[in-house]
Amino acid sequence: MKRVLVVSLLVAAIGAPAAFAADPTPADFKNAAKYCKAVREAKGVDAFATQYGTNKNKKNAYGKCVSQTAQAKADKHEAAEEAKAAADCKKQRSADAAKFAEKYKNLGQCVKAQNGGKDDDDD
Image 1 (cartoon, rainbow, N blue to C red):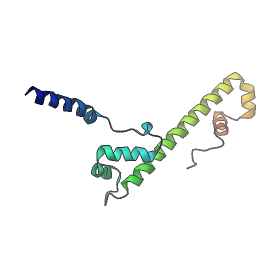
Image 2: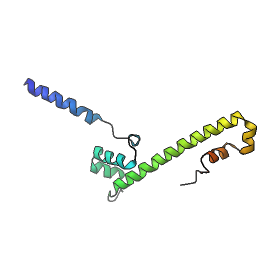
Image 3: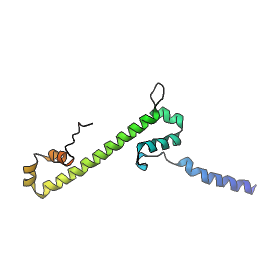
Image 4: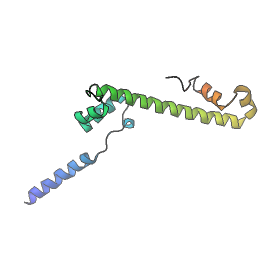
């Protein structure tokens, strides 16, 4: 009886962390494909297809997951670059306002120049 209890406790101790493990997050993976594979394994094929597949036939869920995840990562990266450029431009403007006004019409032009001329309209 003690042996059964000990074995049951060991099985529960080993299985509990896996049951409470959170779903993978895109930040944990270098690329979207690896993230989507991990999500598909964690959720199961049917739940994954329901989440990412089309409403009619739930096909190409994996491709849609990769596409959505890659786009989200790219958007986040671009936002970080723009924030860094804005901070740099504000620093330049506060260091020498006259020189900044000579070179740029406004803060937006400075940020655009720092980002290599990228607009928000570029997709």
